[in-house]
Length: 422
Image (cartoon, rainbow, N blue to C red; front, side, top):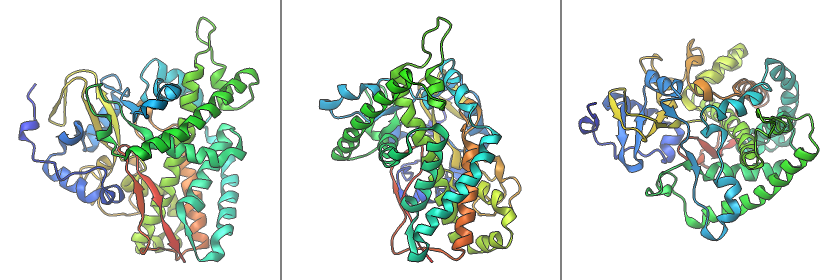
């Protein structure tokens, strides 16, 4: 197999942790597509694919491109043993067959069309109540006052976890997702794919010690006193020998992961849609005049600013894709935003156009076995949240004196602060 690295241009200019790239990937994606849409990114030792068909092929072929690629930034040595419940067990997003479908199937059975329709009135009422809390102020911080509390309350309702502990779940979700990174081999530097000062790493892990204790007790309670919630159903699953299919340790790491994944991405989607509408006032006016375009506007926002920037996979064998020879064991970074901005799939891909008829072909929720099981709930939440916000504050503006901020992360866009005024 001919290796294509030697023919590739220098990609030292590309920095996936740069805030300007996280906010608006299009300038970088346009340059990547124009030079070498499949390339080896030496600083992180990633094999990057950015074209729609190549990204879709990677996500579709889960046997060749394994999901066993995720891990955590190493905790401080003095507390590492206490955190083994998190660090030594597999996450759903990092499982392959047969473990993945066994854990995913009962989860997927919850996210029905009926659930979406049943939830919508509650979410609309909740969104309106949140807006009531700040509408008279003339300003708000979008993430903390609207997007996050709305999305978190929804996932708590879906999963049936104690609503009174919502502030704890929000903090632990931040800690959990911030520590998630690429799982490197022992001889590789774990921190290269997720730069962060040591004191911040310690702060997150100390907080997660409390989370571990909480969820160990929660799982123990569900084992002895199961309810009708989805987590009780998961813990009740038995294998062919009648033993629990989901161990306590697997549950302890996956329950907070599911809570985090279930609302972090949705909160980002809500805020990014409102940011895009502010950046494109003509599209906002078109949407206000034609509210029936709202579902299409959400799809277009997902295409250009989806919550997942890319997905990581590990090649199980030598393979060539997009003209790039990828060695077995290498980590592939499939750029979802690259796929969404591929001119071969989407005409004038840098343009935010809420009338785009094929926007829904984006891969923002992934594809294949690991596609997002809560995608329809997320879409509905975004549609309701954006619609209610526009209805109440149609001429809001992003306060540019307080910059939009992001936390560094490789797979996901973590929006941390969006100041809005009206």
